Image 1 (cartoon, one colour):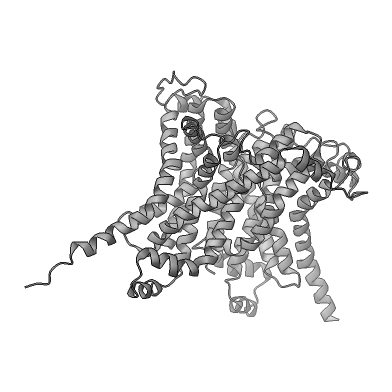
Image 2 (cartoon, chains in turn brown, blue; image 1 turned 180 degrees about the vertical axis):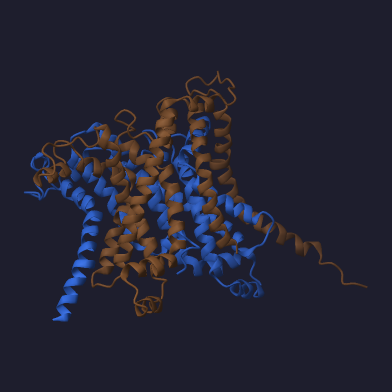
Length: 301
Length: 278
């Protein structure tokens, strides 16, 4: 006679228990994320205008076709590409330089490290407010410094001039985001053992060679993760632009998420806004997938 | 001789650049603080008067006595605490399940929470507004707290799962041997051990919720307006009152800056978990 199977009562709770622990999180997530996303899909296929709730005609892919024929969509898309490239690129470069410097030892390193974090902690509204104040045309500190040093002969209306507004906001975002790169890369640098530096030094490597062949390969993983994460955040972010210029002057600072938001919020065109939000999501999906695959591989290993 | 030269070299090559970067990082922050304690006359002066001729707390007084700002601070505090409570109370059991059980759909569900965290805000905020309007949750504390849970829950689940993973399973087994149920094990044995992780996660959610602007603006009206939304409205209302605006900015920024400095070191590991191993 073979051993009897374990009584069902002993197996049952084990199978159900994890789902019970997960249930609260799943229920809330279903309500605030998954159902809304399905609703976005539904709205994107309809001509849904908020103040006309009774008349919501099905338009199929009409909203998406409309986007492809909408010059503002294309301008926003191109701006978004520049926005992501410039902001993430500059945040990364400044963050890398900061991390390399902070990895050296000097007596006030701890203090410097703490102070550099500050921009990262601030809410987007304060970032917008502070920079708008510094960019002020009449009494702004930036114009004052530039006038005093003779770099400009007249004050510049940084946020009201189409050719400068975009870069003015990029600078504010670089300021806000470089600490993330600095801290992350610094954490990566501190995992490199002293022996590796010493070996490179004994081999007579120059400082640049050490950076190129020892340091960068050792932190490549950290850099890749930080770049992916930041690209997603910057691509999605719209609050600083919204508060600083609202997308203007003209369309100078329109990006894709901002345009989608403005269509829904100011234009009340929820159908078209949803379609624009979905296009953004699909474009970003590739980056998200790469990031998710890396993270999941680590966490589930 | 060599000593001084290398000290000088280190100053020029390392300390001076770091000093410049620190100035760039805290310059705007300090400028906000300085503006908030200047008199109106000093603020309006051009060329710019860098240091206040007299330091004054008038802007703070006016902000707290003559505007709704004190109430807005309270609203933000309630909402941030609510987001922490909701986020953690559902995330801790979920993270425990992800860490301690192997069940069908585990990988898919855990990945789902990561993907959700990467969704564009606009994708969620437009329908959420419509839904909350239909069920009457617009302009309520619960509405905004639920809005903030869209990022609080996935983030907490990932943070807490990695904290649970760091505790050896033997600890659970010992407790189970002594006759503790799953819930008792979680509550009496594991939670005390991961308390530092819980606190770090709580502070991060608090700061993110306190700082959040888009959900708070879309989902709130007059009743539960948060500080970030109120400050943004001041920008439109008092276009030239920079003293008042920067005082508001300083009041919002100070508590979260302090909280953030406490947790940032431990946070980096969580945010880039996997790539950075501490």
